[in-house]
Length: 411
Image: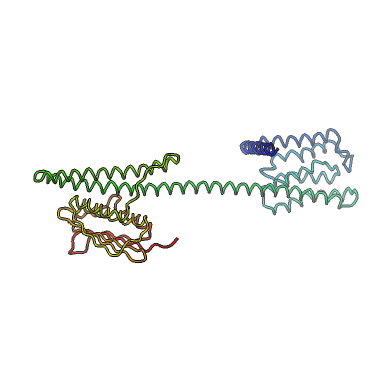
């Protein structure tokens, strides 16, 4: 039974939406049908003599009764678009109807206009609408008394109150529905905007990861290839070592790229099998990183003060900043360049990393024009840190990158 009632309610609501949509597209069709119905009813009342049962003066001419019947019903055609104008148009006919004592029941059609005033116009319009409708009733009660005046006026006032209450109720429900629909639209727009922002942030994250993986490993491979080329003529063993290092670095780069692509495939296909992922680099991976850079021909010294107590995300940030700094040194440092890494940890979880090199600057800032420095700054900003990158002060040569991450705030 509950299912049947629910299905019936759903069917009625769907039919109601279709009718409202049709009426919104073709308002004149509904207005013509409703107006035609009431005009026909008024003419039947006139032609059938039904008005004689309630009239207070039977001696009025039939042409006047016909004119009043049309005057009180035809203007309803514009009741929705111009309800106040319709009420003013009907008012003279209502006055004549009251003055002559014909007392046509078509005068009650003014309640439809009251409904539309309450539905579409400010509430203050109901006061003068009530006055326009009540005045002819009082006039007829005075000229053609039939019992006490209260007997004529009070039912009319009650009818006006009911029509206004219905109009206000429908208006309140309509406004509430429109507010809910507007809120749903705004939530949908906000959801789409959030999705776009999330997609942009994800693209930026992927770009950083791709830059760090490819940029660093290609720089190491380039350095190894250059060293192997010079060593080939003098020391074939050194050339073989360089080729082995190139193969190892290439395989590592391919592994990291496959890991990143597996993550992307998992994010776009939630039902896909969970890929086997390798963990993101941490500070424990700094030693292998430095060894690869040294193998590529860049001497690197390290100074470490304290022991790290950082979350994985903060460790990844420090690792990537050092990796990018060494990559830029490999690219731009030139022959004879060396690098120095200083790491300092405090007891509260803050960390400071400084990477300096002795490269010969050619006037080009390492990492400018690409994703290098912007990527480092974005990573640093995620943890409220600061990043400084620029040439070392004169007379020193080279480049300096200084990273500071404050202590991690509890969530």
